Length: 315
Ligand SMILES: [Fe+2]
Ligand SMILES: [Fe+2]
Image (tube, rainbow, N blue to C red):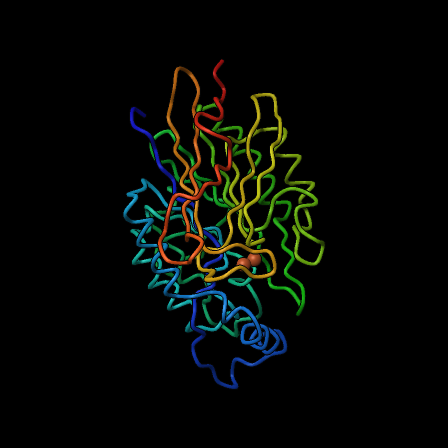
């Protein structure tokens, strides 16, 4: 990889507005979600703001875009259709990788395909030519240059007031194998997941139930970067493994028009990855709305410090 590979990371866009829905789609969780939306989030998540953010993403000409879930709000069929149109405008399925969030896998769907409508954006290279009706399988792997993008699904349908997630033993076992195989190929491994993937990064009612199991696999096999959303905040943790240190980086919502309960206004990250000597160098820039909510600018926040931040596996 002679050039710098740029990966844009966008999350929790919670597409607005909510489409109309009929009695057929009412259930307790959707009703509570609907009330919650109109009480608070409707005035936070803005389609206009999101459109400005995504226009800026396009202007940066990233090599790839990662979208780590919560594209919709209360799992109405019309929301999934709108989200598919938004994804199609963002880029080709091969250039945009999606993992679902808890709002995307939210409640029983009554036979509706839900976020399977986004399947072309959630398929690994081996399934790229799968027939349209085939469900995506997780974790999936896409290799772009010397970067391997690994999509993990942490979202399951839950009761009202619960936004917790679980990856599950089969996915965790498969992830361990994939990380080992991709390390052997000396690729820069990016793990994408909606829920914060380490213990203690979210309260139990909205955290990852098997975060300790997932962390164990990450510590054993390593990764070069882990990306997540869900908390609507900028977050950064580091973990050590035998090959070095890797950041676990969370990004706030890409559509927030104003601060809300400590959540900042809309932003996204640009991860620049370059191969140097026998390792990789990574830098992360944050872009988002300025203080007046007008322009999209380079934010003063530098998530991984200034300049060159890490060299990986330079053995
Ligand atoms: Fe969210
Ligand atoms: Fe979430």
